[in-house]
Image (cartoon, rainbow, N blue to C red; front, side, top):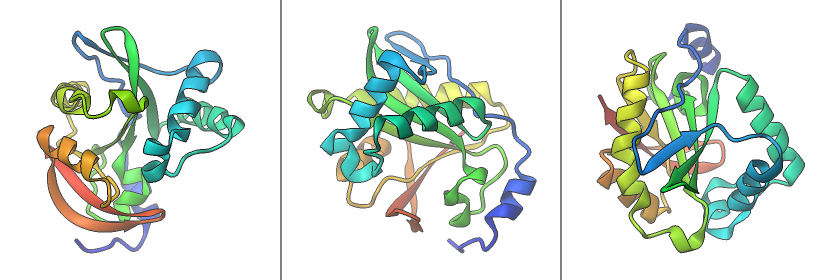
Length: 192
């Protein structure tokens, strides 16, 4: 895919509103995390876990996570989510407007395209099929919440074979390898 030279031009043309918070069906539930207390400490701990930090590169100090969550919750570009399975939080996710993110430099993002970052927080919960089970429900809920969205993209690190397999099983197709600011990523797309 051809690199786009001006991210700002995409931002000017990106007229879609804030990413939606998906309404999931049981046994799944998604909610916005609080930028303090239990939620903040959970998000910080999960993103500092070696199996997550190796690919997300977001093993930040607690105050930076507090600032990040407050910024996301107060803005229109990213919606952070805590996703629970049978009432237990198991996944930290971010839904973002792809046209307003660095990935827009790597493909022709449309204003309503959504991007998705997903991390299973507890190492013991990895390889349990959670992401594979969640993704079809999550993408359906996102498409339903934004009827103008026709594509959802993910951009896992090319070295993260576990994530790539999960995204493939969840309905995403590989499109291209792309260079993002902090990684060589595999751009993957799920179409409506």
